[in-house]
Image (cartoon, rainbow, N blue to C red; front, side, top):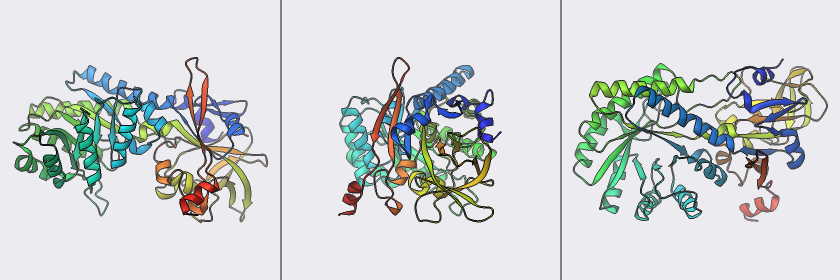
Length: 457
């Protein structure tokens, strides 16, 4: 039995319930995949909205349980990192939950205003403003604050940013400071380009902020390699908690620690990450360090983007042709492009769950998967072992699952793509109150007129 069938059928497998085989065909989140492909065609991108709220609720539950059990004296706020997927249907689903947003550019401010105008976001929603800020971005932050948004917190990325807020918000403002992480010693770029050096933050606060109307209420850090249960992660984590305690000793306004994002998602059949254990470790380690410094435990913020949306989406393909290039290489040519549709597979060697949708009962064979552009790099590198898919001459469909984070923004959805391949049709799937599925077409497949307009013809 192939690894994906073992994965689907394995008992007590976290995530297993998302997949099911019925009549020798694959279902995902209760969606009949063959049926939606027959209805909408391929290539086809879709997002199952309830999975997004499911991930948020799961993480909220873990943190609140850990806080309660350990008598931790701080609160927890879940923020969604909008850069993972900015689509309106994503943000509207996210905001059905009691969470905040983390933004990173001037255009994000326009998104906030649009959500507010449509009644999807209140002026009390926490908005954490991250990133290196252009003048237009800083101006947008000031505009939000002057319009009465009560919980907009810019996170200082550099020293110079502070002067802008002093000059444009004379009545004062609450801000955060981002710590430049140092977690990639194997890289030539040892310290993150974002944030202020850890060793400079205390002096910077004392010499430039203390005594002004600027209140530093958040210390923020993001470990660039992402969250992991590794010694290197926890060493860097604890350094930043220690800095929080040191800053809190002479800054009475500091009350929140933002531990950033990077929570992993299921991107392979072998994926194993104990979310509950990780959250318990976060609470336990912060509590221990704060006790050492005799500092009250901080309120906590996380900024989970990829974790929030990745497992809600998939892209489905049809095999257009089969090519035997030599005695070893058999290629399946798909009706889409990895460079266009799943750029992380090409640029970052990101893996996703690759599962055939039909012909699951026939013998399998090793194959290479090729995209439709003329670029030699437009293929799926499945790792040390090449993909194994049904050996058949019948029409074959397959899907890449848990693709909901970053792929659309990185590929420039709706824009110009390699070899002028069109953006695929995209649908959104929700559930009605009676439990039935509700399908909506968010965007039709891009047509040649749209592409020519962008190109100036």
